[in-house]
Amino acid sequence: MEMLNGLGSLLVACIEVVLLVNLLVFAEKNKLNILAMLIIALLALYQTFEFLMCQAGLVSPEYPYLTFVVITFLPPLNFYFTSIFIKSKFFSKLSIIVFIAGIFFIAFYTIRIKEFAVTQCTVLYARYNYPLGDVYGFYYYIPILGSIVMIVNELLKTSDAKQKTISKILLAGSIFISIPPVTGLVLTFWHSYDLISVVVSVMCKFAIVYALCLGFICLYNSPTKNERKNS
Image (tube, rainbow, N blue to C red; front, side):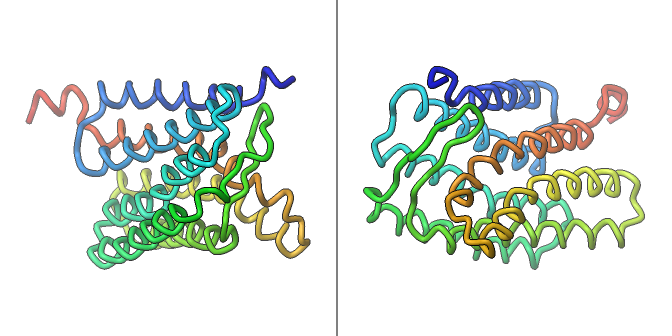
């Protein structure tokens, strides 16, 4: 079974890369779409790193550290993406704080790289050891919760049909990727720390649904052929 380790990561990475290529070709390159494509690119890069660590033997501490550098940019980027979507200057400025927190973790982890390790690889997920796991989890999941609150508020107040459709898709994707961290929170109360160590990997598998939601939004947020002709 070891030869199949990381296969799930490779499959997800391939789907996300194909999605990204199609968006680069067919979607309009406006600010919202570019941010969405960047999120998808980071998700694909994470899955690629995970596959290489599980199959190519890249298990020295530097590789899981680089993997965490990649995903550390996802919470602030997604928070910023949501703030741009709802056109909120306040939350756009607030996203700077989330970015600063992410940079802090990257800098802090740089001096503790040797504590990073891939402790287990399976077909669907990898298990990591990394410092300050609980604090990092707080940093990672709070922006997701904040994004959900922003989307719900936008859904309730907007009367624009297009904005409502995008809000519903974003909300569905955000709730779906929240399943692993919510499960992790429950496991924390049960002191099941061994299972908590796989939450990051499992969440990034769940994020393929979020990537597909972003892909739909990019295309929906692009002018049709007739609209381009009339413009």
